[in-house]
Amino acid sequence: MVSPALRTPDAPSLRFYDVRSPDGTLLQAWTNDAEGPTLLLCNGLGTNPYAWPALLRPDCGVRVVSWMHRGVGGSERPTDPRRVGVDAFVEDALAVMDDAGIASCALAGWSIGVNTAFEIAVQHPDRVSGLFAVAGVPGGTFSSMGAPLMIPRVARKPLAVGVTRLLRTAGKAITPVTSRLPVGPVSAHLLTHSGFMFPAPDHRAVRTAVREFLTTPVDWYMHLAHAAAGHPRVSLRSISVPVTLVAGRYDILASSRDMLTAAHRLPDADYVELRGSHFLQLEHPDEVHRHLLAFLSRVPAG
Image 1 (tube, rainbow, N blue to C red):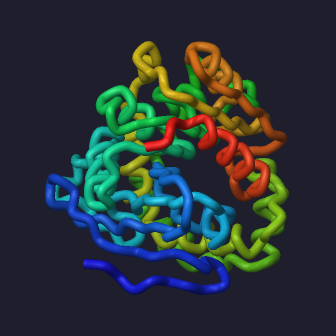
Image 2 (cartoon, rainbow, N blue to C red):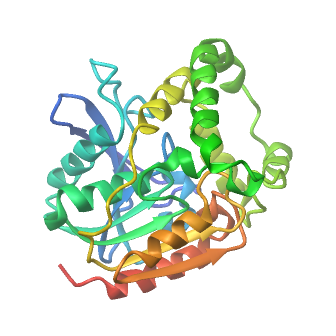
């Protein structure tokens, strides 16, 4: 069932609609309905379209198809709460592609979405014509966290998983607070000067993306994160399509060094490093978009 198009100053071209995943979970998919080559966006965990302001411009030149993660936004939680994690996200991505009549296209991933995109490329290489990775590594994400903080690699995953478990347990008590946090100009300014995120040219886009993100209960988000933590590093030997990896030099959630290492192991990969954090498409929307268009020019036409 197709939902009405949403056209607001924040999202001039954005349409939500429903897609059923193979296990019966109803997903809220979305598209920008733009003209240009098709791109399946595997978004960051629990995030939303508003985190990609350049892709919501009517003249962005890229037709984007994506979806909201299970239990996020308008997507249902699965009947079996164990049906989460990267394998489930792969199934959801393919369901969205099938519903849109996409046999094969380029995939973009951000954060955990990079895990999903690379896993699709390994499991279903006939569906993928290229990979554009932003602030994410192809598997083993939790072992990549904390690099700029000088956390030893051996301690990164146990520490990150421990924090995830703690917040999952405390989530029901925390959610009433996080869901009511004011997300205005002052809080956006503080966030974008915190070191966790860097300054962004459009604070309105940051506010919209954060406000939507905070609608997900903390315990459910951490349930998704804990499941995603089990996704191992992906073997890159079978990947031969064009790849571009865009890393943030000061990203504390995805090591730029790990992304560079992945680029060196791929036969047709470009590596770009920007002065930024994990939120590059908000901090450098025009530059990331420029690299996306250059990447798409390298992808064979479908």
